[in-house]
Length: 518
Ligand SMILES: Cc1ncc(COP(=O)(O)O)c(C=O)c1O
Image 1 (spheres, helix red, strand yellow):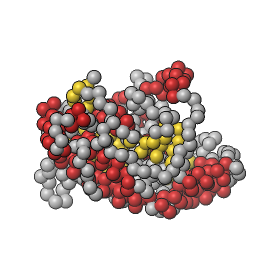
Image 2: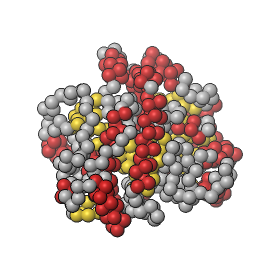
Image 3: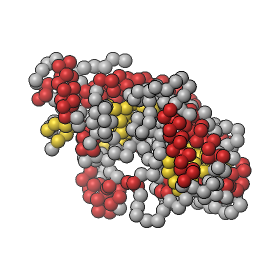
Image 4: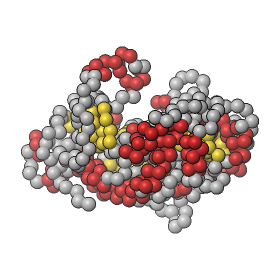
């Protein structure tokens, strides 16, 4: 079996005791091979393997069903789709979580850098949030929103305090797909128009309606879907047709050259031209709206040129459309500089959709919009049994308090910026790290065959790296059209120690035995 050289054991190190020599060999190795592959079946038993940072929390001993039995049930009783999306050749079976840590059936501890797909915003089983949930569980679970309950109204008021003045009207949902479904409906009802534009490579959900917005072949079925949904070119300044060294709002720019004068961004102009072309050719003269993630999540932490959204919003509004920011991944301070991703683009949307981090893993979502747009929705009747559940609202309320009290957003900015700049140094050294991007703790590292071609690192090599990182005790995510972007979306943010770990991954990836200092 071929596997990517993500760690070199003594077998390899035996060739030299000098770490820098190892590094040279390594560099030569992948320069020649491009894809950085060699025959290997090493296990990470080397003393050079980085150690996990210590953890005071003691997980309970697991005494439940065996992992084999769980796998049997998964294979034969769960829809095959569940198996299909299962991460890793040797999947992990998790039993407990505490802040940034997860434990599996074997009692093995993992550092969770993926946070349940950008969802665990303040840490697994955060004690404060857990306490609030427990208290509410003993008091009232469910009523549906046909009755008034205190948690729904307290939460709604607390949440809207985080939004600009014109965005104060909330409808609570149970997921991001539902929130985006409703936002599509509201946009259409309010404008009286039907057509909606999204970016190629975007992910806005898997419901029949949102599948039209989601622009990813892998998620599409050969059924009639996406009536009135259109895509424009994703302004991806690393992989796209245009991009340079000043385009994005990140501590790290692309490796592409730039000949723009100060204050001008040719890449932005070109991508905006693409949107103009879609407006001129694919949609009627009046449109319902435009959906955009402030940073593409599933698409691979893709960032657009700085002024793109500003100009796109203007064009969309000129055509009668409303602008929707999908903050399902970028919301709740994850990008560090702001509470919402759209704030980093200097725009104010007409609607904001959110989920994931809203309740630290408890199923919840929301659409927040203007009074006028909400009024258009209220002309008909919409009902959702679980909307505004007292339990969900209590948890989400405690998450907002915890973000403030723990200083999560600031930590995201500090730790994320440090992490990004250190990762960028590794990119300078190693041919297979094509791009390092993101803001705060929404970070993508794009793996390539080589920097010149920017061709994605082959899936086999990516999978092996992914598997090895897990075997070393660190969970990360994968994104991008080719699964070529590793995503590090750190869940609980009180942990500079995490940095050591992540660097260690890359340290082993590139140069075992050599410590990276802060
Ligand atoms: C940006 C974005 N929007 C919407 C969704 C859909 O959310 P959910 O899976 O809660 O339906 C996702 C899920 O990954 C997402 O990343």
